[in-house]
Image 1 (cartoon, rainbow, N blue to C red):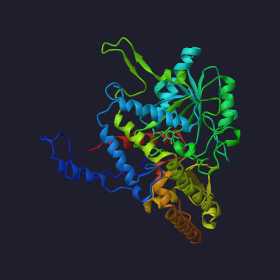
Image 2 (cartoon, helix red, strand yellow):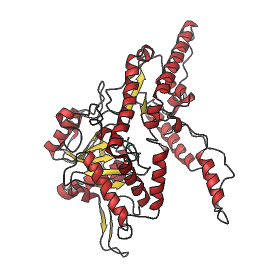
Image 3 (cartoon, rainbow, N blue to C red):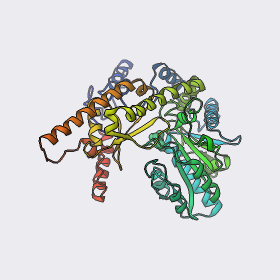
Image 4 (cartoon, rainbow, N blue to C red):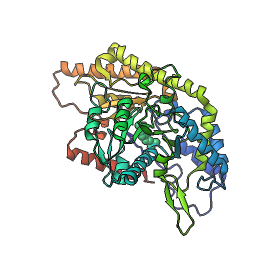
Length: 471
Ligand SMILES: *Cc1c(COP(=O)(O)O)cnc(C)c1O
């Protein structure tokens, strides 16, 4: 969730009903320009963790052209828009290839990581119902997937991710597997800490029990796929990797709108073979409107985004992804190394686990310096890093823009921590015993853990979503 949301005043006025007559083109252009320039956290200057993964103007222009050429296209009508069908099939094939898919591998494109995960859970539930008669489906997962579980009434089991590695506990997964288990889940890497789970061992569990295993590479995207070719350590390379090379892995979600730099609204869900994919299809052979078949949640889908994604993959190519992986993971490594070796940083903050890709999470190492105070102070300097909870931590998902701003990120963090620790020293010297006021990040990400607190957070979150729809 965004840390702050300024509901901006109207540029001209609030539009609460359709204009009587349509606006002229100049007016539309001018208003769109104003809307784009509303005061915002500057992703353009590399100050936002995640969110905008590439942002290069030449690429954006090419995407806009590709989207423009296909703005009416809808893959629900493959006979009307055969080009979109071809591009979608090729996107799936290219991503499948990057994740070492087998020759008979399959996949679909979706609107994003959430839809990819939801469809993977649905397909697993349907498969277990059809083949094993499972009526009380359960997923063994260590995080996320709550939405799919909630929508599809699948029981979700959580496992802990114990320090110091912060990987999903494999013994706990083993203990939780039962006859109703329809899917195991692993992350490569997870969102909070950028940690890749022990996929070889979880794959062995999946094979042993004959249960599908989904690997969430939504965030890993083409960064994780190209680590090895970019000269970085790739997870579990000696033990057969993290993708379809592991025999137990049956599906992988890959957000093309993250580190494949495709326009927003683009993800790919890969399956080991068609027999897994077919369980997510929706078929209505006797519908009055004609025999109906739809591969995923949406009916009509934007062909323009398929065109934008296809053009992006073709434009950047393997060499381009290797190059951006080197820049992004290079920046993440520089950040990690600086935290581990700079005396100011090292004495106050520590890295969570051993991240291998683009996300680095850190937390305060002493109980006087509040992690959320660091987040607030960075916020005041125009940075938007992500605050995490249980335990309190901050992460930065490096992107091409943030990679370029790595040196000012590091120098600002050193300054912020120096200032905060000076203030703590001053308070101690003056004998100030007053209760320390936590910053607004802490309020927002309230970590009390009691049910009452979580209710408050839920109410706040509900209000936040409502606010998004205020004109
Ligand atoms: C982003 C992300 C998702 C969800 O993706 P959306 O594209 O935001 O729907 C799922 N898993 C991980 C690890 C992610 O980072």
